[in-house]
Image (cartoon, rainbow, N blue to C red; front, side, top):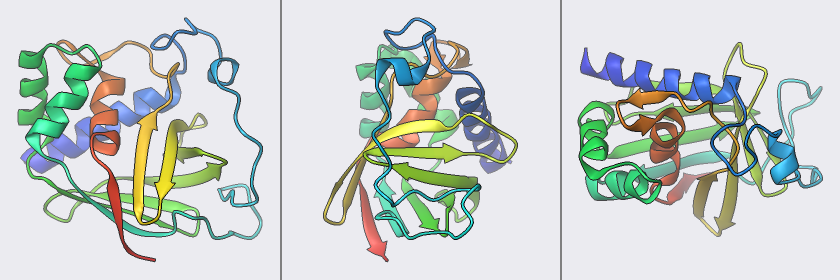
Length: 189
């Protein structure tokens, strides 16, 4: 039951983030590309609209151990009060081992007990990862830094609508905490 609530919470967080852009960043409602232009495609783009799926530098399986300290620290660093961040941990972090698989333009985020938390399509545009859930037309945009077998992700400002995942915790911060609080390490290509 708890895994279903957490999985539903993460899906709701990303769905809201994906559906609405503007309001959280310095752009104050400007289109995300107005704050940070999307770099030109490097030929490693893949996605639902491509005729033949191309490989990307992310293809493979990545794992992350997300500790309570990292999870809370991520939220606090983004303006969430510590007590609200601790409440978020109780709801959204039932364990610490996560897996993220990218293959043929699809991604799947697996939680601590092996259940799928989130999945959909993805595209790589230069130094940006665009994650798109089924039924959404607006991607969740993450800046990515690939250093050998380590991947760092960061939510690009200007996304989200200010809704709260929990009292005192914006949706965009809750979604970012899973993807961005620690580096991901490639375990297979």
